[in-house]
Length: 146
Image 1 (cartoon, rainbow, N blue to C red):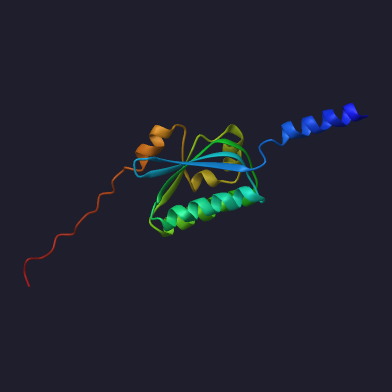
Image 2: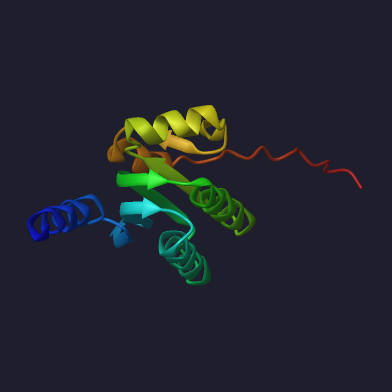
């Protein structure tokens, strides 16, 4: 019986090793890149992501790239946090873009139609380059007559 229990505990540990969301922040020029690993869900993961993005916004860092290559799970709360963060950045004149979606995340984002909300890239170089796009503004000619 002890051997069975030991085997079960060992198996349980392997299955639940990544229960949290780990966030590694790095800079690529003026873009904050957050490398995410783990689960974005109602427990601590969503709160950690929320705090990280809000701190960046408060610091005036409004170009954020979320690297989702290491995300193993996302629940509805996690999706809600992604949307909320996108709105927060948009209201501050910034952007959140996504890169390296796993096949599972790609499916979830397709089913929920969230691919229409976010700019999603397959590679980091393209994602980073997209932040440097310049928007041209058209200045209307002004009359010189008064």
